[in-house]
Image (cartoon, rainbow, N blue to C red; front, side, top):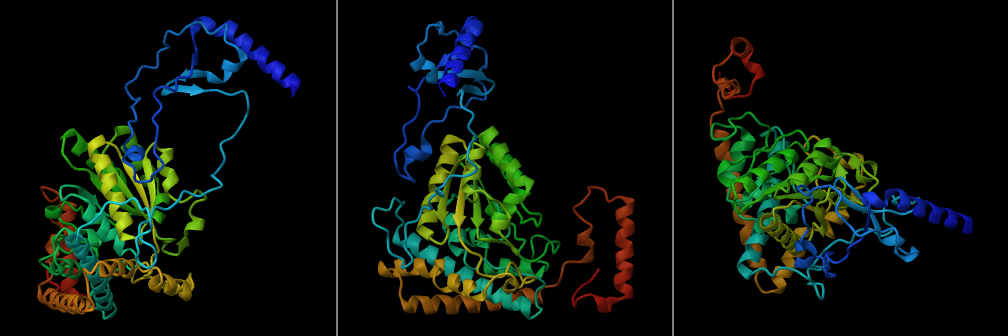
Length: 471
């Protein structure tokens, strides 16, 4: 070891003599390092100034002669590379694959709906809290009714948000109506919060003439320009690079708004996830990325998707502020998203939120999750870790909700949904011609040929098509 240290000193001495005139070695300057408070939602932690290096010159700066530095100052030397100065060490040491301690999960409410002592959160008023709970309960009823409608053969497809209602509603409550949402497909609660009616949900699922998508999309692929809600697209994670572009556009237009995009844990295995985060970080675009880490990507468990400590650590790898939050805690989700939104808009930067939750329902009506996970596991999360029940307990403990309110809300919501479904069924379907419209300004010949061919097929075999279908 003594010989090794002696050789190291000789190497450093040689470097000083050979490189001293080019001033490649620098003293490390700690005077501008930000000091963070020990609080997960502290504005100092999230809002501390981080100077962009994108436009800084990488030219060698003039520094005092370092040839006479003592051995004690060796550890304070830095090298200048494109992108900034980097300290160096003569010890070969690899960064560990992961920390021995997982990133903690921010929460406010315990499992019994009580505020955890000394919690750092943004208070909500009675009016806001009651509306949040009402919307969470409405989302539950909507999922149940539409799921049953699919099982009855009245619609072709559906998927629920069971277990993830807090992420839907609490995140929506924390945003501005001017913020542009690019959803995955398990965020109907965001659209519900923004004013999309039960009738509009039903019309989309039935693909009738009142459907804004003109019947071209599968059920649950909602969209609304009026509510700044991009239409759901089936390909996984494609909305993340788009969100980076939307956020950058809002920045260029100096809008007091940000882009907000959602993704499941399975979507982080797609290349678009990494491209989206990197684009947003490099372009300093105001985007809030919200990942619902619900344990399962259809039948693929998270242990088969990645070895990292979940999703939150991936944000740091791209230079994005990140936080892990209990996705079943509505108050924690609301506080984290509202703080992230404030950072994204005021500082013009992206933020990543990993919401830890569990997908209680099947992936969709095409899935039977009991084939790959235990029924008692599903039941545990459905009953003991239910985000709607937890938030209800807190609202009730504050004297803002009662059993009578509960019964009235669920009864009225169920009645409204059944009426919306019956009305949606009576609407005519979109005509076949809408399949070929809105693609080209002038319809090309090959598309006209396809249209004529399909019309002929429908006329020849009308029994193969649903009632009310017409060309």
